[in-house]
Structure formats: C-alpha cells, structure tokens
Length: 79
Image (cartoon, rainbow, N blue to C red; front, side):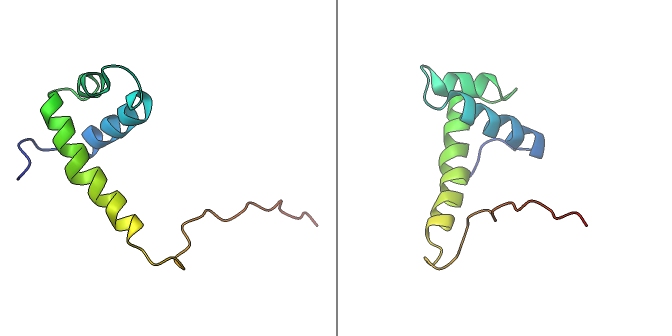
C-alpha cells in the first residue's frame, strides 16, 4: 500500500523521538500521532510498519560477520 501522507525529515525526527518516548506506554499510537503534527494514528502506524520495519528487516538480514557495534572509545594519549 502506498503512503497516504508525505513525511519530511523533520516529521521523521519527531516521529522517531515519539516512538522512543511512547512505544511502551498506554495509548502509544495516539501519543506518537499527537507528536507528529498533521498525522493521524493510521498514518503513524503505516509509517512505522512501512519504513521502520523495513529498516529493521534490512539490518537483521545483514550477514553475521557484519559488525554493527560501535567502536570502544579509548582515552587519547597526551604527549
């Protein structure tokens, strides 16, 4: 199904922030939609399943030897 609303980079930033904040709380979809001006619950659910889950599937499909971990920070040595 094609997206029914356009998402700008700013919309995505607000959406991702709201998902992190509300994903496990009561009324999660309603709170996420309220954080994305002009979007409805159906819009955020569709965006989540269409975009976010596609990204998750892509990451999970990477070969096991592909290292996604962040490098350990090492203290810089001063001379």
